[in-house]
Amino acid sequence: MKKRSTRNRTSRKNQFDNGTVVGTYAFRFNGTSMVTVAAGAAPIPYYLIGVGLIELDGQGNVTSGKQTSSATPLSGANASLLLCEYQLSGTYQVNGDGTGTATITFTPTTSGCAAEGGDFSLVLTDPNGDSFWLISTGATFIGNSAYTPDEVVQVEAVRLNK
Image (tube, rainbow, N blue to C red):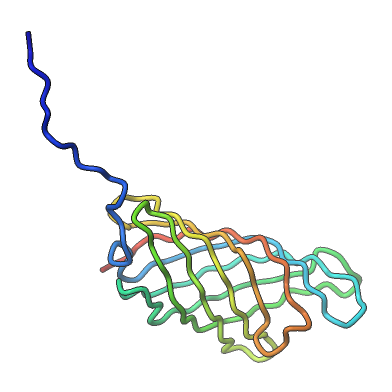
């Protein structure tokens, strides 16, 4: 009869931390946003899509990044495409189980585009931190809290280098 090993098994429960996600990541996103553009006006639904690069330092900081996004109203007589470019900064936190959060500031480099802040839930999709997903959990127009967008956005990111 074989004797069962009593050796301690390593738990994978707490194998992740901020250092798991370090380097330059390419990302793409899409979603919708309900934006009120004037006091008393009904919110307008917008479709959002974009791509970018983000640099994570392994210490919980977004050290740099850039994003190009397109937004277009899904209704309205004067619907037109809005193309914006942003610089990114912020923070992130990865928990031991591979989930986490991120807070990112989007500073426009294109005139006519609003500065925005976003909160996200994060989950690693690779045990080495080579990819992760984000979903939006809150958004704000920086400097204009009267018109808070109500967003549903998903993000997929893939590491390019460490």
